Length: 195
Image (cartoon, rainbow, N blue to C red):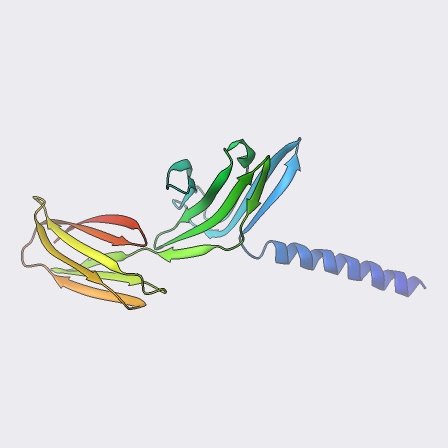
């Protein structure tokens, strides 16, 4: 009988530990009542110092912005019930990707949609007079590339379509400063380069 109680107790402890490990394995969002306030606790793994956490409405208006201060795991509670009813999303902007997690504010209640989406930002690098543009486009979303001279003259414009892996090289004729404007997924990115 004593062995059976020991086995049951060890099984319960092991089950609780497994549940805790699984619960912290992925990015997670939870609503917990603390001091009669509903808080949505956000836990994000694999963040780096300088990543940006934003809360936006469906029109893209930034309601909250915070620069991540420490590399590793980020966790913070938000009282989102004070927001007007509607649809919103958390956005974690990393170096080359943006993760979005939608949520809805209802009557004193926050419902987080577990369907996280990730879009990849274009990446620009230079070597000599060459400019390299790369982007992962898993849904074959188009990428618009515009290159401007330092005095604002459009030197080149093109849209790259129907490919999941975009890798493009541009050779610039003259040394100088240039502005690249890259558009994809309804977002625009600007990059200033010197050759």
